Amino acid sequence: EYDADRGIFILRHKQGNMPVKVAEERYDPATRTFRSKGGLPGILPKNWSVETAWQQIDKDTSKWTMKIFEHDRLDFTSEQVARRVK
Image (cartoon, rainbow, N blue to C red):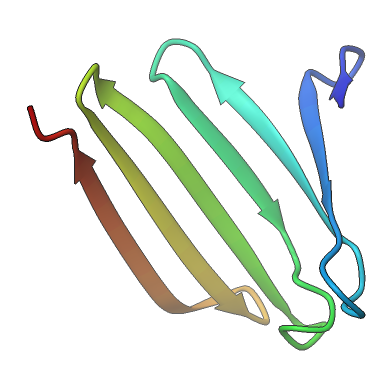
């Protein structure tokens, strides 16, 4: 769902008996990037948080990054670049 007052997309996901995951995403049209920040209840401890970004580089390339923080200290990063094969 889109919250126009806050300018964010709210994503809810439930899988099996796991708690509902809620993410808030913002889109930056200048950089063509979706960014989200939040926790993963039932997966990560409460003092951990996750930031993700998905950017469309060009029509055939996108980049996804994930950062995991413990007590606001960066603990883990991952980056993936995907290219369409023609």
